Image 1 (cartoon, rainbow, N blue to C red):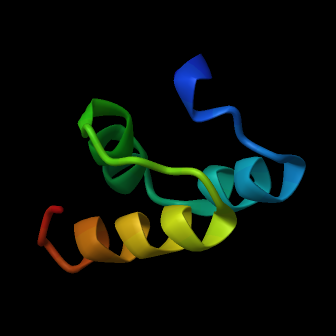
Image 2: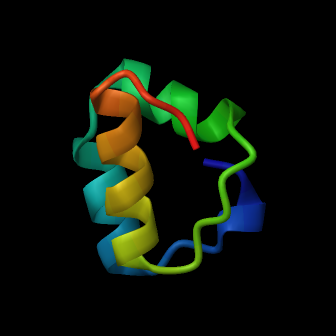
Length: 52
């Protein structure tokens, strides 16, 4: 995960639980992720095949 996300331990645990495809989509995206809620929202969008 790129350093610019500055994940908390809870965010890192959630990120690690995601599929490889969703993780890669998040890494490649320009999404602003500042909280666990942001991360969950962005991950759900990618999992559903939509992007921010």
